[in-house]
Image (cartoon, rainbow, N blue to C red; front, side):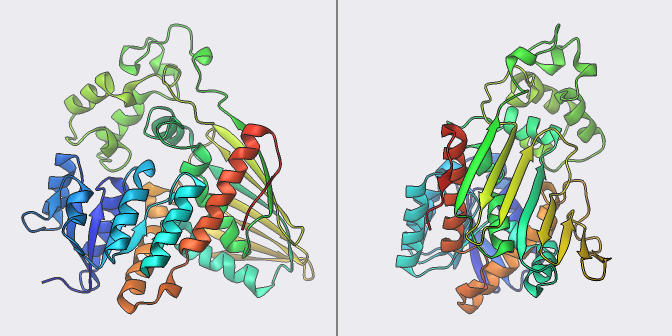
Length: 422
């Protein structure tokens, strides 16, 4: 017997499985009753974990949609380019929807999603999980209190991490814009959305610069092979797939990103994946084209400015932010905030316990610093009470941040300063 609200999951990859895991920890509030996943191994494993009834695990979301309203809400966690159709179908059937970010890849598709959920009268929460972290709540409280006065400028850094860039954006699913989307949309729509949220307003003008500089054939070392397993210089390469994934397997770290490569966590399975699959390729011999560094400059209606920097060439770590106000300065690194007061010339350190440690906890492997759980808690509460006002990443807010990303990409490609349409 299901308790609380019922959920169907469309796409049992890393994100869908992660969100659904929250229901296992909170059975009194939500129960997963169906899944659509084309990969049999993933589908069967998901069905077993959630003890789904026979027939509740299918290979195509259209099969679920054909059955009518199969649950109170649907978690749409398909590939980025496949968001629109399931959202339109399940919204029309009356399902509330949690939609993994990005909501869609074009302005037209984003607007169609907003129109569909508003017409159907269903709740939509987009997976901008950074809005839901304890760290974000603490930072926003400081800004909203007026402690640092009026915000004049912001510096925000996303240190992607050298191995994460190699895994996801050179060898992996998000390496090509024609198969996925831009780096800014795939990875950093989180950040432009987060800046909009904590500052309480979207930018009005943006410009951007960035390119693919390093992970190109021309930078391939002398003597390097096309695959790390065959490479004579692999031991001296910081991007060695053999070392990175092999060390994770040896240490028993079977979650993401290793789980993207293999289902059977054995040396033989990993060797086969590295020899035959995309993740064993030399980072200088892939078909990637997304940028490996980018900056976005933003101007707000108040005259305040912000700069966002995304770069692959870092140790993977939490986002870092400096916010400069007329009465003080705020610095945050994901685990603590430092607030400096100009009047008293004193600094207060606001620690956030163990909820947002370093080492990339603001990313998927760490549940985005509590953001994944926070999003699920909020979404389930909104559906259970029928109160969409609980959701911090609803359709209109998310549309605005996506329009900012699209404007920034136009600016980068065309060398322009773009206006962000409301």
